Amino acid sequence: MGIDELSLILNGRGRALAAWDCYRQGIDPCLFYSSSLLQEEGAFTAKFPKSRVNQGLGKDSLQRLKNAFPHNPQQGIIEHCVASLSHSSTSNDGTTKLLIKMAKDGLEVETVIIPWEKRKRSTLCISSQVGCRQGCTFCATGRMGKLRSLSSDEIIVQMYYATQLCRSPNSNLFPIDNVVFMGMGEPADNVDNVVRACRILTDRQLFQLSRSKVTISTVAPTPKAFSDLAAAQCTLAWSVHVVHDETRQFLIPTFNPKIYTMQQMKVELCRVLNSSHLASKRLRTIMLEVALLDGVNDAVHNAIDLAEFAQSMIDQVQGLKLVVNLIPWNDIGTGSRSYNTPNPSAVKDFQNALTERGIYTFIRTTRGDDDSAACGQLATTRLPTASKAKIEE
Image 1 (tube, one colour):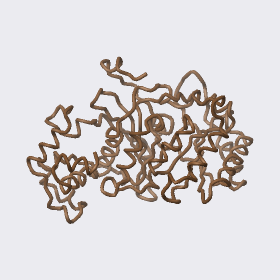
Image 2 (cartoon, helix red, strand yellow; image 1 turned 120 degrees about the horizontal axis):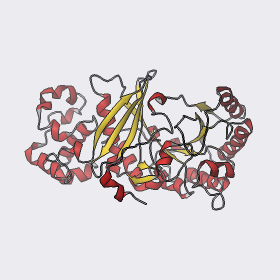
Image 3 (cartoon, helix red, strand yellow; image 1 turned 90 degrees about the vertical axis):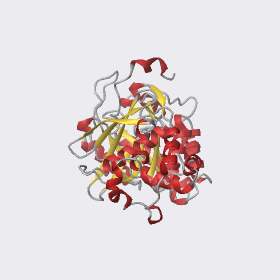
Image 4 (cartoon, one colour; image 1 turned 180 degrees about the horizontal axis):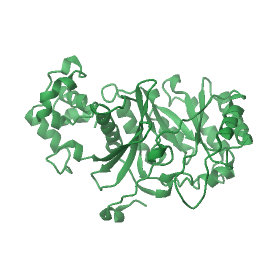
């Protein structure tokens, strides 16, 4: 909920800003301003703007805030009206996976905090849907199918709980300064809520992230996906995987080259990157993502094709910063198709073929794979019985 909406509910912009001072730190303002947390307020208010250190909400405002969430089972306490944190687990490398349960129907999504020791900051990988309808054959989420899309509040609450965990005295996690929509779901199938969530993440009065620090990853079900998601004014990442039409359809069954070829998709993306959708030339950045699978798309000739594809984009978009992100496939267990992780030497040869042709390329470090928290491994298995009949088609 943005400042304007909260201002109406709380009868004042100052109160709305004070509530968001709490949300931004992963604190429920209903608890903070009406419980024993006030006894420890110094630890929290030290991060509040000086002009609002002594700003309170008052009894009436607190009640109005609670009444704004009718589904709350505990007298309007916000943390239980949108979603609750069911479980968290930490892998050997410090990557932390959160299981978040939605209050609406009990469905769950996973979100992942990835700490980076060198820069003392964390990246948050968030979900936009419960499941996904794109059916990527190498992805655990794709095997779930789409259960439903998340609301913007249900997307943002992942940032709320992750921030809460990062500031915990017992946590070794660093503050979050980077968010990637690379969790469960296809953002292009939930555009309105994803765009709204991005605006909340980057609003200078809300979560205050830089637009260049929020990345939306999409397989782009149609060319229109690029312009739709560009409205978020954040960085785009395209899950290309391979530029050969037939092979890509094999990996992503919903991709149909008889309707749109990869060349047609590329033309539309370049048009969007050249358009006024992007208010700042600094956002003319595109990441091409490739999940490398042994014997499927990891050959040098695949890399050469990708290099030509990428170079044609650079030639068409003035000032484009293009990066290729290579992701060695992470095992997702048994399924209808058997894939294998590529040999490290094949991954390096693939990277070399790209860099030799002037394409900036890096290999994503695998994080959290021992806790099924790595790229492509996110999936939830618990589905409340009462919700089974309500799953979206």
